[in-house]
Length: 253
Length: 253
Image 1: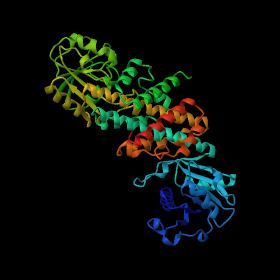
Image 2 (image 1 turned 90 degrees about the vertical axis):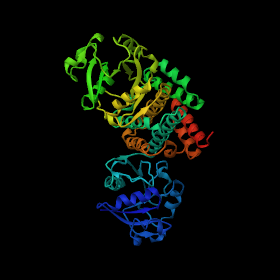
Image 3 (image 1 turned 60 degrees about the horizontal axis):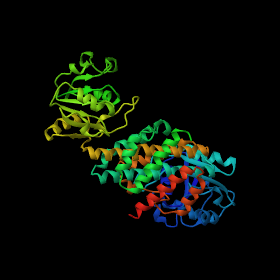
Image 4 (image 1 turned 60 degrees about the vertical axis):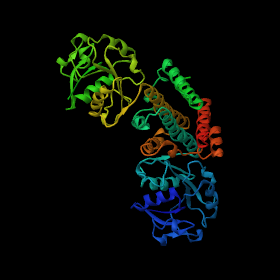
């Protein structure tokens, strides 16, 4: 049984409280929130504390607050030599106050307030300063997820950049697709199954093997026709650069 | 009962034969293939013809051959004033020989030989020269798919360009994500659930509403840190241009 305390009341903190509450391998000792109301729907009110001085002993303290507040919160904790972790994807482990043993417990997913998440498939990226603490974090993570990874602060930076490409930028390409449809009075619905299939293929194929289309085929008749067809200069520019990038990869430049 | 003949033996032709064979509303009169062996696993050999002169009367002839061959095949058909359609996404309806009534029957999906498809969710884009022919095509399409759209040749061009953005370019962004992971010894597996969730959101949200991330938030501290982190000039260029494009959209420029 791992006894843990969650510090914070935001989106990720609430998803974690939900996931751990239903978990027989974990006991939530307490949760800290400046305002008790923020968590009252999730936890017995006796377990919700609003002052750091009221925090009891636990095996693990998970700080799940905004990136900017992690440092200050960790310095205000009224104890020493405990295992204290944050849940941020972009923040180094070093931001945590050195009076406690440091770690990172980063669930890599886009959390939306309105959408339930299945934690079992969410990758959880772990890092600890001390080797012995890793087992505690790993047991905690594995109690809610089947995808637990040891990821250093440097690797987490790479993941965040890569996530911008596969999530933020991909979604922006969906938007351009929709704009082109709207400009020519085609319902965007027509493209939705293709979007799903594109993502579906990546479950089993490496992206380089899944690549298709005129750029990959070096079909300049089609790519030239597409560039003639596109009226928006920004879209034209993105089309050229991504086509070139696909073709350069094919050549292993 | 619609009586149709399929001309061609490639990937799309074979998927269509499979879908129509199981369909009580459609009778496959014949299929044309230069080589009988190409279709023998799908159809009674008596229905497979290897000469155009052996083609019998049908309500609809679907030419499913490579884009370059459509024109020649349509000119070789030994009959007139029948409904003849092609299945190409990029080719105009005008490419078909004028001795017959022209149409387009374009299933918009990436077909792979090794992966079964569920035709019921594949959009089928229809076009006919004559208004009366549209009903025949529509009944045929609706017998295998729940997503049937009337799409002009001009609209089909737009769809193809948009499909390059949401499919080819999106897949290339997955590849860049994988390259960044590999460069920093992070398993690409960590990103796969995020890729799925990004596509999943588009089932119910417009892309502009689903957009998140540092570009959208105009978080220049993070975007500058990412640009410092990226070592590959091509990736850096793509990062800049897509970040700028996201930010310009936010401003409704």
